[in-house]
Image (cartoon, rainbow, N blue to C red):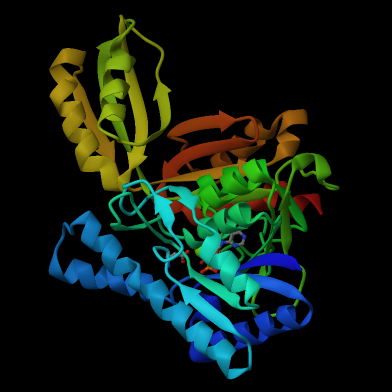
Amino acid sequence: MKLIVQKYGGTSVGTVERIKAVAARIKRYVENGYAVVVVVSAMGKTTDQLIDLAKQITRNPDKREMDMLLSTGEQVSIALLAMALHEIGINAISYTGSQVKVITDGNFSNARIQSIATDRIQKSLEENKVVIVAGFQGIDQEENITTLGRGGSDTSAVALATVLGTRDCEIYTDVDGVFTADPRIVPGTKKLKEISYEEMLELARLGAGVLHSRSVEFAKKYNIRLHVRSSFNDNEGTIVMPREEMMEKFVISGVTSKDDEAKITIRDIPDRPGVASMLFGELGKQKVYVNMIVQSTGKDGKASISFTVLKNDLDKALKICESLKEKLGASSIDYKENIAIVSAVGVGMLSSWGVAGRMFDVLSKHNINIEMISTSEIGISCVIDAMYTELAVKAIHKEFIESNE
Ligand code: ADP
Ligand code: ASP
Ligand code: MG
């Protein structure tokens, strides 16, 4: 029997009608001879609502209790989906992350999966049951409930496909696949038939919320063929696959943005060995995630360093910088929260010239100042003022994608 893992996101199970529609789709797969393992997210905006509840009680919720709270959303949807399947004559059983031993590290709210026990799932599959597993959650070594980070159900699904030994993993969502930019924001986007793991990973990392970046990492590592598609129709979606197997390669396959980072600038630090290591060594030791780093060329033996951190870590990062200010010999430390990172991604960049120049030109034509730049093999990112995010993404998309029709 062919095994398939299917993941249904929040909107796909957002109402009772939607849950029934998902059950009907699963039934079709069962009738076509598939063994089906299903991963579901919490219904609709449940996770946001749970976060909001916690916020009404405290500004600083205990991380363990937060995961305990957030994991409840998925427990509701797995049970309702199992009932919906029973109603249409399909044998099904639901499991929480802890029941199938999704073991993670103890990093609450952003835990990483370490292992999943397959025996209970296999046994249920042998009993011809559809197995429904709660996405987004696991337990650590001490059996505390953990969650995998927002959007983490995608990663639960890919990890399950990996341990169960199937390459087939469908990610059902509320758009028809992966588009050249967020189709809800940018007009004129195109659905990609296929995209490489590398490009998808870069896009996910740089803000394209359609897939959790760790799910793409897993898929690449274990060669899982991810099919991102809509649960609202039967259209073919986008296949995330190895670069070598792709038919079409674009210079730019996607444009994206993110606004969850803030910029810190430290001015007038001595331009000598050991300064950056002291600063970033300490930030790393205290688990502050640093993304972009730009150091200005030294003048009069002094240099400035700007870098971005997650907004959630900004206070912590500033405290660390202040504590090192004297040792670093810095003249000032300042920060900016209302920034966005806009990025263009494409494997075609590897063999094209002038992509960066074109991107900067588009931004300058719209009078958008570039505050920082970083590049990778297949991506270019610019930090800009957050008020220009939508304008920048639309303009870059127009330049690289719409004008190449
Ligand atoms: P789910 O609940 O199904 O996991 P998400 O909201 O996490 O759904 O992801 C789907 C959403 O991702 C879409 O509704 C879309 O607005 C957004 N999105 C952002 N960038 C892209 C992109 N490049 N292609 C498709 N969707 C994107
Ligand atoms: N329910 C979680 C969230 O909203 C996980 C997910 O949807 O993948 O982030
Ligand atoms: Mg998602």
